[in-house]
Length: 179
Ligand code: IMP
Ligand code: MG
Image (cartoon, rainbow, N blue to C red; front, side, top):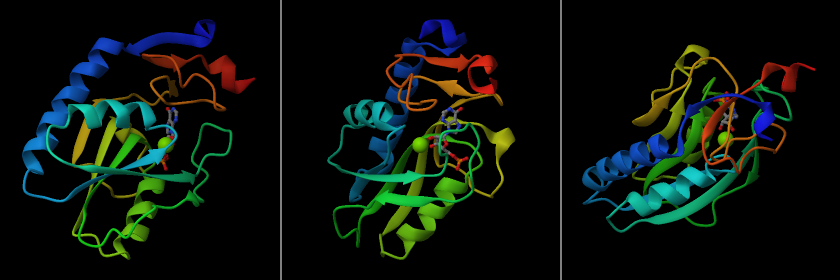
């Protein structure tokens, strides 16, 4: 598995530091709100579990699953909901917890869908941001670390469902997905 990694972009320690910082900001901003963290499976699972423990105010969590990628490295543009929320979100302050904002197509679709369900508010929290690749106007309210236009894996992020269990963020060797 490690042989497929070109280099380590962000270490476990660096990620932990940023997640703590974002958690503190959210705890401050949402102290008088009805916070519901919505995690988008599966890539954001590592981030979600660390972030929720860095949040010091009451909150609830829920999960959605969407697919936009198939097995490649580029967004297909078609987003399917594979798993919807379990509850009525009326009146909740939703914070969408995403692993990475790339073209932005997945999140912009998701936000449109969620707005029709009458939440009190919706904001976006993404751990990684690849702004160079954006194709729609979408601006994260909380963002962790910038990522160059490379394909990264680890800390929940996959290539063909593999590498999610790496504790750091690594850049995948091109030969792995270009062969
Ligand atoms: P978007 O619709 O292009 O913004 O797609 C975002 C989703 O694509 C993320 O939630 C990830 O699951 C996936 N993704 C985008 N870039 C990467 C990457 O570099 N590594 C792994 N997954 C990625
Ligand atoms: Mg994802």
